[in-house]
Image (cartoon, rainbow, N blue to C red; front, top):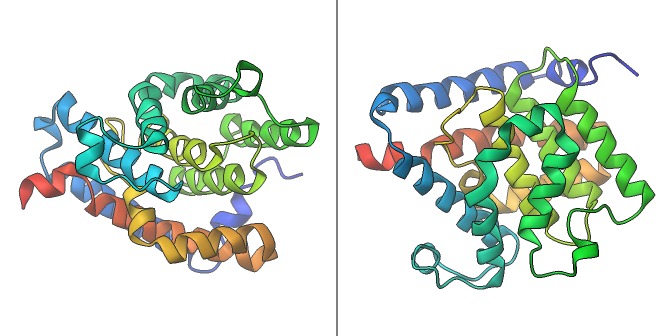
Length: 241
């Protein structure tokens, strides 16, 4: 195995330019829309918007207004619960990623029996989790956005936990962007980007799982587009409108 398993993916046709453009778009939003003036409330708003979008992608029927009022359905509440604890796990994601992922699942699945919270389904799932942990602790020259995209897709397609794998995957994706310095205050909303592009999101995840190298390539190109949409969904953009 390559010492940098992401390097090949980062050099695929169209990927370098797509991720450079996505990062530029994020940086423009963070720089030009008042990063120095942001507050904890702005971060909280971004996290709440992300929790709502992630919940909808997981099957929630709750509106953003309902989620804000604490009246969301069970899936929405699960996603919101993760969002309230997520940023505190950023240091652990880089040092002990398996513990961080287990904690995200345990928080999301608080209503399940204890033996199902934070634990992989079986040894095969545990092995996939170890591989994801290796990506998060290994040295790579790939952009942090690409790492986030791969971690997201791996968690969804491996489905290592008994439930809530999509919520875990999208939370981990956001956390990579925080931990790797792309968006330290967690002000963009990648989950909303995926929701805005939902048909492409779901079809490209299927392609990642079943489509071989072409499916992986298509997912990476899609994810760059989703990150650009997530930047547009930031509360910073909305505050400037």
